[in-house]
Image 1: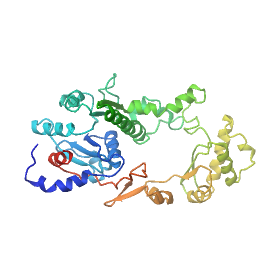
Image 2 (image 1 turned 120 degrees about the vertical axis):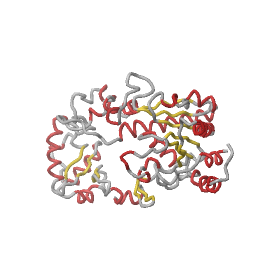
Image 3 (image 1 turned 90 degrees about the vertical axis):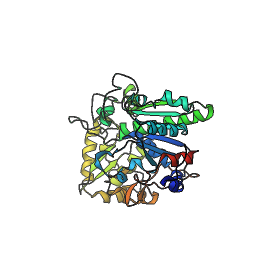
Image 4 (image 1 turned 60 degrees about the horizontal axis):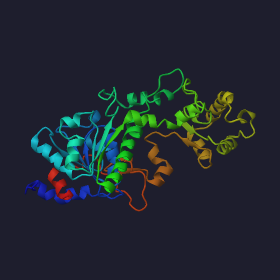
Length: 386
């Protein structure tokens, strides 16, 4: 493809600079079909770790909820080209990008990419080593494959949603974290990176079929093991050790209307908690795990935590191994001393957001750029990828 002498010529240096990011995946070339939720989250992490991720957007495509593109933080740290994939020239441009990439990621319903003549069979003919990452709610096959849904519905059929919340009330929506991001985006990310290792050693690409209903089920593997061992009662919502049934693993209200999260599952940590609550030797807490003791212990702990404000309990319990932490809002979390010391949150052009994770000692990541800083052209990308 010939580079024109127009504006692209003058933005080649800037475009190449924006594509080059530091991190352990530096040099990995990824094409992302712009979508929502878990696929952009996986691509965000790839870009955070140094991959060169180029987003293909449809003309006029806008972020969800009508927010400004710079606030669409899933789209950070990568560049965008806008293509009408039904127009022959733009379709050819998309194919040219995919031919030069190691990874393609898409999050459409099954069959959409095939109808655009961009499916895995067509693209792997052009690029046999291509890793083709597919992110859906229900998977590429099965009776629900063509149905619409969101995090809550994908999580619902996994057994995970049923287990959350107190008995007698509907399960609460746990934001979009369990199926969308953990069961979706992170599963796609790990599958794609495994397939890249295989492709680099064999020269053969493959399709990675990641779906949120599968991933949400996998997040429940511990609970299914506990159930098989007779240690988890699936008929009782909010009545098991990890979902509110244990007095030592739940949240408690404090005097000022705040909350603390308590989790000393191990006996040695529970003993430290009791010591600093002034309850050492109290026979009420003699058998930490006894099922019939959980109600009375919970009532007593609730009474105790209501005697002091949240931050007073933080001062008492954070300095020892009591497994207790304040429950912080999004406004408060960036100011917690631990998060400040770790630089867990970063400021990008006035937008405070979580920084890249995990950390790498030899190949640290660059700070993120915001989501509207990367509009570019196909020619700029192809020149850099040539």
